[in-house]
Image 1 (spheres, helix red, strand yellow):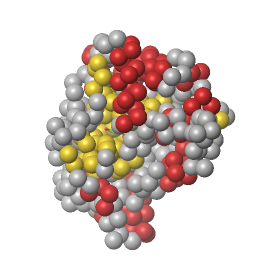
Image 2 (spheres, protein in one colour):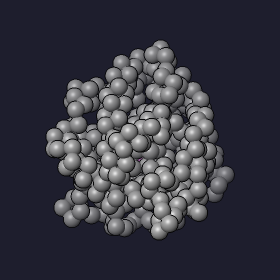
Image 3 (cartoon, rainbow, N blue to C red):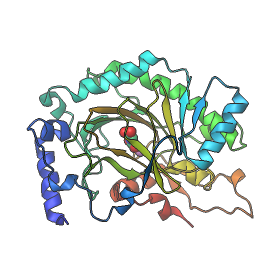
Length: 355
Ligand code: OGA
Ligand code: NI
């Protein structure tokens, strides 16, 4: 068991190097862990059985099907799994390659350049550090990340590092357009007007969170990302071929196997709340790996802590006398503030909104 003050000490010393996991721990050839990167003893949940793809598999939805067929599959996947992979979604593979390359270029940049972006202040346009939840989590994660809000206030291009500037701007346009289609399909899957979720402002905010999971010397005793659900309406994730993303389904950890060219879509907490539990915000995690680096780009449809006064709650058409609202109303910044303060401690922040 690690004493609280020692965790704090290690967090501070990592912060002081401003070099995050990649620059701060890998380059000095660390082969053994400092204590914060180990799993806390209470995280027994992380040890649930893992199953292989042949036993249970995350649904794959081919957007080349008829619209009716797609809506049916999305409904089933969102109710049973809270996650699905999409193929033939229309985002060109060159665009997917460019954003992955851009993410690698930034993370493998000279540490002196990266340092200038090192911050935990979400009010800044572009921020880089290891573990956004480092101070509030019981164990650190083997990962570096950078974050950039692309909406509602698009950044000045000069505020994005050259290494990934064009790739991020180009990719975000495709993400917004595919996002529009997804919110229409999800609305239809709920039996609502196609425009319903868009009209409620689900696409107002877009945060790109670009992860780099360096090769890890002891992947069996730490994680790339601890178990969590997302504080989003939906998340659109691009992952490379390394693998390691898993979802908790029927009490088992199921691999989200990499499929070239596919995008992973998961339902976030806000949509579970708005659909009164019809759609599930799936819990997921990322295993650390020896083979990396692993790259992923998570696009959060959420304005997170940016001021936004819209009040959300279970959608009126989806509740009735027999199915009364299960949650109280929330605003996105208020929810996100509590979510971030809580950190990735393995519990769901949704529970705090239950009536
Ligand atoms: C996230 C996340 C998964 C991944 O950023 O919320 O779950 O594969 N990422 O990096
Ligand atoms: Ni996530």
